[in-house]
Length: 522
Image (cartoon, rainbow, N blue to C red; front, side, top):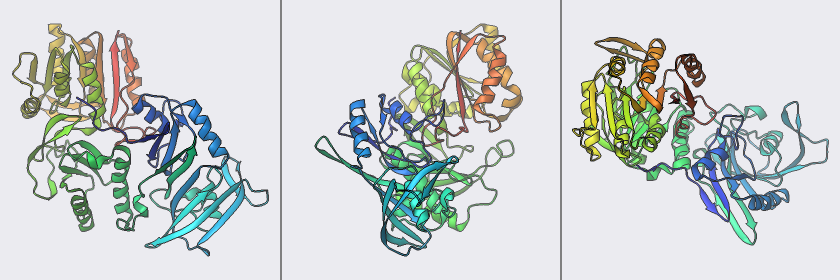
């Protein structure tokens, strides 16, 4: 199992260039959170040096140095104004001139940056009108200096505030429409230039003034900037997460699966949007209505686009999975567990693995592929266990092998029986639903958490690992930590950090919908 969804970057002349997405800080905003540089340091497994910064809400070209010596050289180039920076932005205000240069003195005053004309200037920006895009105007900005909020302040002062820049007079929009389009400099005799793709809101062919169309288009472009996702045609990843409240979109190989959360069915404009997406990316689309799982575990499939089938296969990091459109609210693989499945794959070799609430057994499959000595799979649904065996077979694993067990059982009852038999596991994966019904009664994570975790810990051997996950929306990661602290009165264990969520889901400073934690028993 090899990671195939990798962050995109360009390396040249000792520099790492990235096309930063909007909403990501250049560096860590506070302890415990990752910024852009920390994310890419983790991806490249090397130290990176920040040589310039972009505001959190600004997207586009960003440069890191790979050594302190190169960082010092590039920093001098910035200080001497020898780096050519080109930005693009949108405004909905007309301008009196099509090209001009503006200078002012920028300083911080009462926790915000202000631009003043009554002092000698320390900042200078040249503006050039490019074209009209519907009711908006596309501009180029070339800053000759590098003061904080410089372009935003100067655009505001000249009556063309940037769209979405509420801090500096811009009209409301779904984002700040400011993009660092290119960087150019000469480093030790070598000409270095990095240019990004145009943002969707700056493109003629794709520009659409309907805000929701732009939000969806930018959600897709975010994954392209991060992963070059158009080359990942057979892979599984999320293409639209919390950009819109109405729906989320996952790619499962040749299919796009839309989770529809509104009470009302998709409108004609929604369906036309999905049809445009289908045509552009060459994907079949299935739209599933998402209601309360306890009220309607098999909500209707609202719409399909293309010659869809009820079963197909797709890959995640080289592992094959069978997906289905006629069974439950999901096609069979929860993509927010991708990083956790990689973690399990890295830790499962020679371990006795127990996978509780296994669903279609993604965790069991990667454990078996990693060389686990035993894989015990437990789920209350016999249909899901049959589906699990199919996933084993798709990856060249024999589900009838003696080291693989499939138990059709209530998980808490299974754990209690395991405690009585004094059976131990060295790796347990526990990913319960927030709420579920079975012939044995009703399961609720808020009510059954202690009972579930206590029995897991009884079944975990010394130095064993427990991966616990939940998408219960009323809990934060902090809530889980507090609940676990109470269990330390009875058990000795250490809480370890779980893998960070994939960047196709929440950004590093957002509380994830799916919370994970790892426990090592002392």
